[in-house]
Amino acid sequence: MGSLPDTLITDAGYGSESNYVAMEEEPFKALIPYYTFRQEQKPSFSKKEYPPHHNWNYVEKDDFYWCPNQRKVVA
Image 1 (cartoon, rainbow, N blue to C red):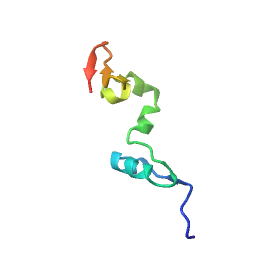
Image 2: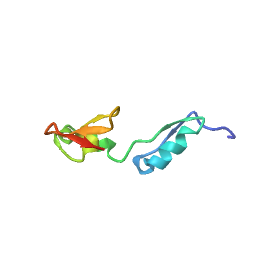
Image 3: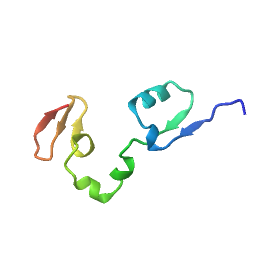
Image 4: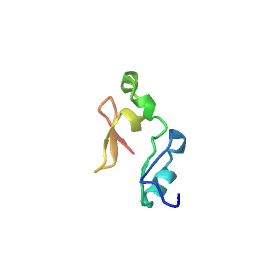
């Protein structure tokens, strides 16, 4: 074989911040779903209020979330 693949595909078991950071430095594209990716695809998931990093609106510029009660929550 002797060559690297163009794309690396894994399951969610490899989805971690350290793996995502490491893959940014590699010469190939990596497709690694995060742990709750499949759950988030279900219609019932969007009705849940917690945890905030899934269903709350995040304002990246100011680094805070809007909770379902329209209150500002600092990240």
